[in-house]
Image (cartoon, helix red, strand yellow):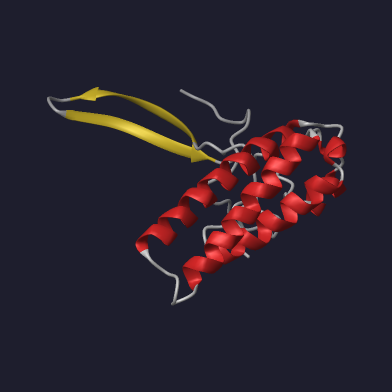
Length: 160
């Protein structure tokens, strides 16, 4: 399965959506959903899976069937995203429960490091600038190598 929460391939999405809907339908209160929401999600996922089966068979595949499958998928995606946003934001739902329905823990956002630059110079002559530039990085990699371009900039940067 892909790294995305909602996979792009229809078969992967059908598997993920079924797992999500079944687990939500078992105990909707645990995930902050009503029984009606769980039922409508389950129905939308079942409609998509039926439409996908029809669209995959050579005997029944047509432009109309594929269009119905795409509409059923869009409906299921809309319901899953809506419920997933609420589940992700709800701190009372444990990480174990979130993993059980196929949600991954998002990593903490890393701050982008900035390069620090100090420029000292004054105009010299008609169109020339005499300048000296110094770059400093305030972090080193764990292996002691020179820092990458994303090295973290700290308080050691100076400007002239």
